[in-house]
Amino acid sequence: MYLMLLAMVVATAVLYAGRPFFAPLVLALLFTALLRPIVKVLSRIRMPPPASATLIVLGVLTLVGAGVFLLAQPVQDWVTHAPETFAAAQIKLEKLRRPVKNVTQAVEKVQQEVAGNSPPAEAQSPPTSPAPAPALFARAFGTTTAFLSSALQVLVIVFLLLATGDLFHRKVSALMSRPARGTRQQALEDAESVVRHYLVVTAVINAGQGIVVGLVMHLIGLPNPLLWGLMTFAFEFLPYLGGVFMMALLAISAFATFDSIGPVLLAP
View 1: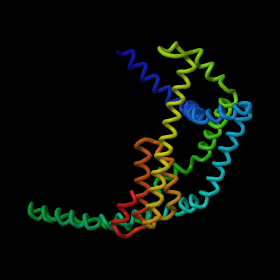
View 2 (view 1 turned 180 degrees about the horizontal axis):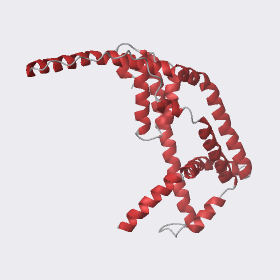
View 3 (view 1 turned 180 degrees about the vertical axis):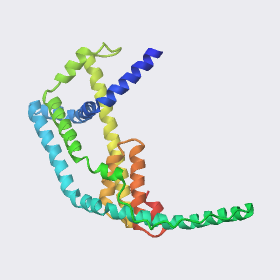
View 4 (view 1 turned 90 degrees about the vertical axis):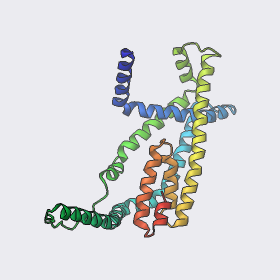
């Protein structure tokens, strides 16, 4: 029992310390499982795996480039106005907190009078200026270089795995123990099929959520509805955390944009 716990702790520490290496590798394996059927289809028309891998990578780069071109202006506008958005949300939040603060001070004053103590002199608080965007927000948009580096690693690994055909499968199957049913190759193909179906179904669900969110944001008048829809599609791949992150961003943006409570609550 203790050896198992120790092994789990050591494995977790190794994975955490080696996340710059393991994360791109795992993502590359997931994308390879998703794209391998295209290589098989192209092989039926006698296209060799290296050519198929090149064609697939160029297609992915084209789609990514088109997406970046379409989203460049909305993202730039949102990032540019983000400090103003957070500042406006903070000012409105202070206005909402002011009545609660006054009631709290009145209750404390009554309690002090009942107890026979004179209320202490309140220190004059200096006027607060709108705070800049949170450090987490600035940090999230300050990791472009690391993100591009990881994306390039994933792309190279995917290309190599697709270009070598079934070489990776044969190498892994040679290290596997014999499954209870079928062959090692069949077990690997079944595992890839499960991963592929999961990714496709998750992408379809996320796309539906993104479309709904984008339409609702457009109807209630929140700026950049296309950006909100695409961000929903991307962040929903992170279970629970992605949804919480999107709800927080939508709540802050709606709070800074609208004056009535209805649209503010409807957005998140």
